[in-house]
Figure 1 (tube, rainbow, N blue to C red):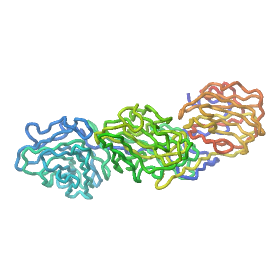
Figure 2 (figure 1 turned 90 degrees about the horizontal axis):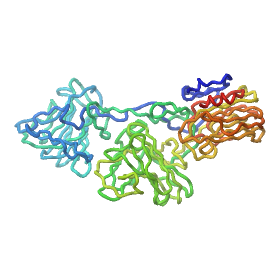
Figure 3 (figure 1 turned 60 degrees about the vertical axis):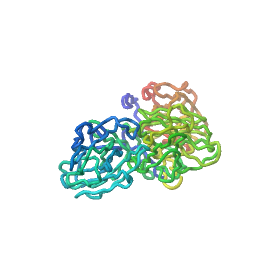
Length: 612
């Protein structure tokens, strides 16, 4: 039931609807002496493939001058370990132009595109791809399998043409990419085919004396961007996936947060946190074991092409990867976190922290499908996972440092969600993880990402308050909140407070470990204190404390917490503090959706209805 359906007869003298209003009362003061990140409801193009049937070349692809029998043979071993690749066999023609092509839609002129395809040598000496806008408007890239990492390029009228070729795994596959800017576009087509090294002509295909030469083909992708990202397979529709954007807000600008499915969560208020890692986006040197690293391999959660691809390339032994380290102190609780997305056929991973800084067996396993799930945990560590859209997740591990040393969260490949720390792993050399936004902080939970680029970086604490004595007659009243908290470990985590600035007079609602707590203090003496009704991390709840002389009650989620206090004096207050307690500190580390202040007490029935 909506808040408005449950209004008591008494009207609030102050109300902040952060979930729907998206703004801060102009009488209030919000401060944060640093930038901070938030999911503000905006979206970005997260991944794209503009060709159809990107690995089913016997469907929408036209076969031209292939062998009359067995020109296109499926069920071939692909780079990802499946049998979805194709063997393309040229016909016997002098000259001939054997190729596969597909007519494209939605391709614009004067636009930068990148085409890519996985190729493997058969008996043909070369393979090529072409992107054509129309006759005599095209670009091409060609790979010589005798020197596969040095592709050649050419074209007519298309500009800014470049190419790359990268070895994939240990089975002879290469990913050939072609980047260009289009000119005229009338009948755009994508080509792939074998050749003897002859350059493609004005139509887009290579014409040469062919006699049954072969080439293996898999995974064609076309993107409107300046370099290739990780491959996304398509069938009968193009792939175009949008995802929520993690954006940076300037100093002293409030963060109105949204879930990744577009639901408003209200205003996010957190205490100070420091990312101890110097490079959150992994642009520094990395430590790798049985792994390789590719920068700018995909679109990261902030909409930039900064995600790093870690490919597991070991045949045995432990695989792992991590960027530059931070420094931890023995006996302190830390949380390491990173945004990840599975690439290839494996959808499980492990996150651990360096030993000896942490216990030598600490580890948490995760499944990166659906909403995500936490598997086995080891060495006293605990973990959490949250889905942020388009296959991306934020995973975290929390543990107590065993010694003062350098540390970092480490991503590890596993074969089972029950694997212990750093298991032996055999890879197909294609599967991997996209990683971005590494963080290590002295917290028992993962706070919002603190972006760092060269040194440990601090996000300042946030303060939201309003002083207005005209709101209070200092008789009875009521305080109502809708809130959620990330942290369940804190003894005092302030939600909202009516106070006089000294702490001697206050009406407060707070989180007390995993409980809702409400109390009243007058002239420095606590008059009433209630707590109960446990809540979960990031689980919204409603609470209301209604107070009058010798009559104080606390309600949460429709139920009274404890018995009504029949012996209580009234405080004298002149301000509202949100997201922490009257004395400062003790931050909410969570969201405020709504706050209402009443200058008169409301009935217990009204308090129960408000919080239902």
